[in-house]
Amino acid sequence: MMKTAGNLLKPWFSARRFSSEIFVTRLSGYTTNEELIEMFSPFGVVTQARLIKDPKTQRPKGFGFVKFESEVDAEKALKAMNGRIVRGRLIFVEIAKTTRPGEDATC
Image 1 (spheres, rainbow, N blue to C red):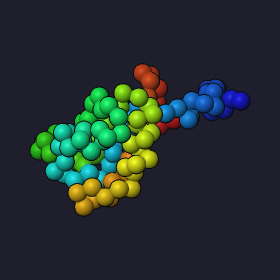
Image 2 (spheres, rainbow, N blue to C red):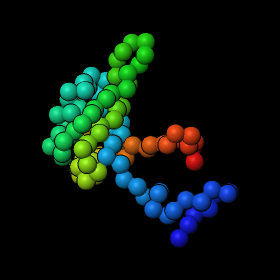
Image 3 (cartoon, rainbow, N blue to C red):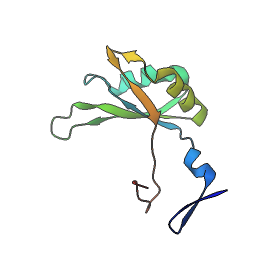
Image 4 (cartoon, helix red, strand yellow):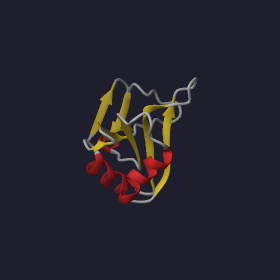
């Protein structure tokens, strides 16, 4: 089964692709990369954790990315941590959206 978007054909499974990287939002502005690793390491091997920081102040903006060694670990973390309260804040976890070189992120 194929989806059509104009002249662009995509296999049906491309929309359901799971990633080993998750996107975490609504984190405390005082969260560190080390805390992010500690928070998600019970679900598998964390290969990278990065908080997005304000370029001027270098303070975390309250969201970041966690990359796992496997997609299975990322899925476990998403199911366990999405909607949890961490440091008094309700956090949300979703699969990080990735784009391939030359691909428009708005598609």
